[in-house]
Amino acid sequence: MESIAKLATEQTNAQSDTLDRMSALEIVQLMNGEDRTVAEAVAQEVPRIAAAVDQIADRLRRGGRLLYLGAGTSGRLGVLDASECPPTFGIEADLVVGVVAGGPDAVVEAREGAEDDSDAGATDLQSHRLTAADIVVGLSASGRTPYVAGGLRYAKQVGAGTVALSCNQGAEISALAEVAIEVSTGPEVLMGSTRLKAGTAQKMVLNMLSTAVMVRLGKAYGNLMIDVKPTNVKLVDRACRMLMTAAGVEYETASAALQASGRRAKVALVMLKTSCSVDEAERRLQAADGFARAAIEEGSHDA
Image (cartoon, rainbow, N blue to C red; front, side, top):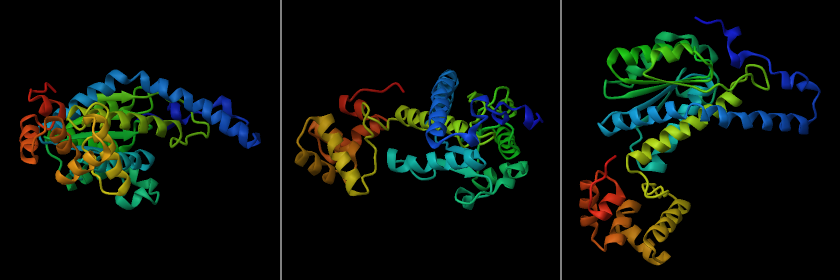
């Protein structure tokens, strides 16, 4: 196992060697400057991120699940991204799952020692009944977390898809995955505090993975989150405004269609765009594999 001391994320940052003598303004200016480098680091990995999107979308299209696996900040970011998917894209809660070392309580209470248990990574995936149909994204800023490595090894054993996301070049977990994403964020302003640039980089990549996958699965119409679950006043209003934009109707018409559809914005959209009934809109969407544009055009969508 590579020495922790050699990892780029564990080095001292020359820009912040007088951090304890800086004013508040100087500290946040420095951090802001360092954060600007993160997007460029992520940009270098776009081809690998896109490859991961294609693999994840293919697995989900064929009935599999996406499981994020990580420890500490990385694990919490996976849980965060997974928890946002059901309300944003109207999916079932068990389609995208966040698994964090130490269990659910570790999301709000640090359990740093849990990351050193390689067997636990496999055990946790077993408890989620991982199968060959699924795909696992292992998250580790260092790229060497035993918990994540153990989970990825188990995923390979059962035939599940594997993706590794780290913030160091030549990461150990990269060798355990079919797709390896290595975002080189370099030394942190506060030495070793990978919740900073490394955490930001991982959040950016997770945003790309889940959003692009869901778009590829028909969860958007143009740039509208047409499968959003309107479960509160704000989201009902958003759904109505989306329908106004997409169908070119007044708010009252959009609201009536949304209610008639059972608060399913995608069904309401097809109804409005094709002047059809709820049943016909459902039939069209089923025939189009859930792609609203194809359902409206009564054509086929090559995903």
